[in-house]
Image (cartoon, rainbow over all chains, first blue to last red; front, side, top):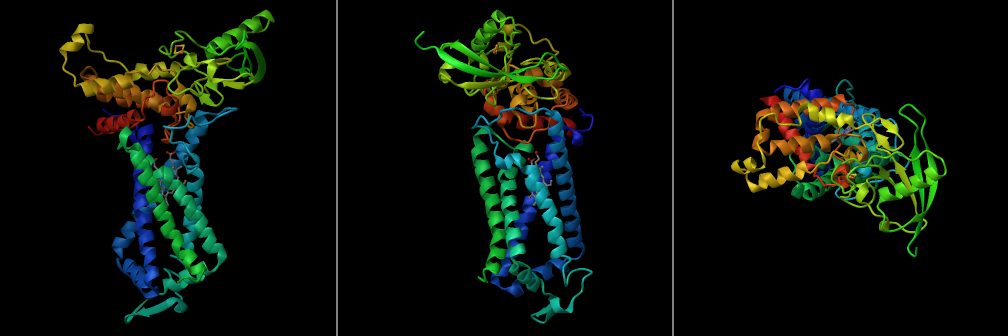
Length: 232
Length: 250
Ligand code: HEM
Ligand code: FES
């Protein structure tokens, strides 16, 4: 039996936010693990970046998918937020959470704020790194290196330079703390959105989601701080 | 009386749907711990009537937590601080002499205020009318026993069926979403063979109607479960989503 417009329905919107959200979680997890290769040395990091760039069409396909996931996620997230503002034009004088089993938290209430900052960060991040010196359309002989006889982009040099600046190192750290906040509610919420929940699992899923979000965020934070404080 | 309490009430007053509302503060010197919260409002209204003022309008009927008529936000929580308790069953023994209590109506675009603390909840009726029924002959009480239904399914269906339609889920939801109400009705009937013939039609029609009424979307805050006087679990919402996907995919 067909609904008027399944993907625009209250269920459809949540399925889209949930599926894209989980997709983005997989993406940030892979990205974070990739970044950690820097801890084994600049060459390993550059080789990893070179390997990704060498995937060619496969990389483009992945990039298109990631961009699409972000766009659908952002559009639906913003629509849910706009809808909630319309659904309660006059707020309460006094409002508080009733406590457990409510999952309402600063994290759940600030999804639109943490999400929006992540979105703005993303644009700056891609301009600084992907399209930075030595990147596509920005050839720069100073950012070319040779690893094991292969010429490749010296992305490591750029990363070390950027995170030597307090603005980048601490700005990045701050945004990753927001990512942790986003994922604390996000991971459990996505599973509930996809209907994959039962009451007995809620505390476990919420806990595992929060820990996974924390690991992803801390994994990202390790690199800029290690660079800024000259630990690597 | 030895255990009499002096309670201050800060109550939302609004003369009609379009009127400008405001808070009025009243003192009820003759409250006592044995009263229910609604009886406190009764005492306030007697005071107001004696003073030739308009009594505070509020909804109520059974006063025993089963009809779903009552419902106000008490100090920021739908139905007040007592878990799994409609405000008609909230007792003043949870308060102490000198307390101030803030009382507000449910706030949602889909629940327009009629007067003071009374809101129009016919949006819920329209969601039910869209599909929250069975149109086959379900028989009389004894006929239910002739249909084999596993105990676990019957128990779960009963949990969902315990929804009294008070609207606390909407009131407490930061998004003013009616997901728990709608999901409880859908899940209740989805658990039972009597609900099977209209199962797919029901979920899509009710979800569409919920959106049409102007309720917000769910962000999985689970605040609804925490204020539900029947403690209905948000697993109903997860089930509604599964039911919806099954319905539109087939
Ligand atoms: C690093 C990238 C991001 C990841 C890994 C991520 C992950 C998630 C996850 C898993 C959810 C839960 C989905 C659900 O409840 O169904 C979620 C929800 C949400 N995300 Fe993101 N997100 C990211 C970026 C963004 C961005 C850029 C925005 C921009 C506005 C955003 C806005 C939202 C909003 C508003 C919600 C809550 C939706 C609701 O109310 O149900 N997210 N996110
Ligand atoms: S008056 Fe019937 S439930 Fe409160």
